Amino acid sequence: MSLERPFSESCEKNKEPILAVLRDVFERPGTVLEIGSGTGQHAVHFARAMPELVWQTSDLPTNLDAIRAWQDEANLPNLLRPLSLDVSGIWPTKQFDYVFSANTLHIMSWTEVVLFFACVSTILKPGARLAVYGPFNYGSNYTSDSNARFDEWLKSRDPHSGIRNFEHVDTLAQSAGLSLLTDIAMPANNRTLVWEMADGSL
Image: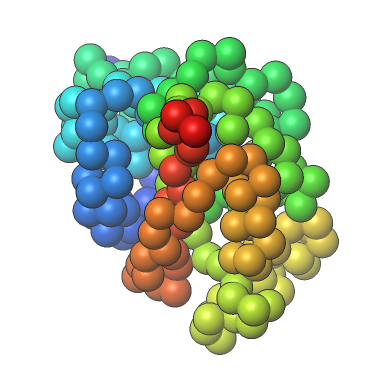
C-alpha cells in the first residue's frame, strides 16, 4: 500500500495551463531541474506528459517525503528521486537543459531571490532555458486586487517575503546572463516568465 500523498488544490488547477507553456518552451529532449517541487504533483504530471524530458525534483529536506510519495505512485522512468536543495546552500554541480520553478520567488526573501538567479546561471547549459511561474508586480503595481491581498497575507507571515517586481527580477536574470524570451499571462493573475541562457557562441 502506498503512503498517503499530500495534495495541493492550486497545483491541480494550474498544472494544465503550465504544461501548455512548457510544451512550447521546453521544446527539445533534455534534463529539467525543478526547484521547489512542493508536493511533487507538478513533477509527476509534467514528466508523464513529456517523456522526452528527464525531470529532476528538488526541495527543502522537509518536503522530500511528499515528493517521494507521489513518485512512488507514478513510477515513471524519467522522474528522478528528489534532491535536497536550499537556494542559500549547496547547489548541484550538474548542468541542466531547463530549470522550472513555480510559486517560489514570493516565498523567498529578496536575498534568496538574488542567490536563486546567481546560482541558476551556474547550472544552466549554454542556450538552456529557465521558466518561473507565479504572481508578479509591474512598475511596482499589483495586477489585481487579489494579488494585493495575497501580498499582504505573505508579509504578515514573513515580512521578508512578498510578490516581486518583474523589472527587479528581470534585472537579476540579465545580470546572470539570461535574456527574457517570453512573459505569458496565466490564470488567477499569475505569469510564466521564460529566460534563455546565452549560447556561448559570441
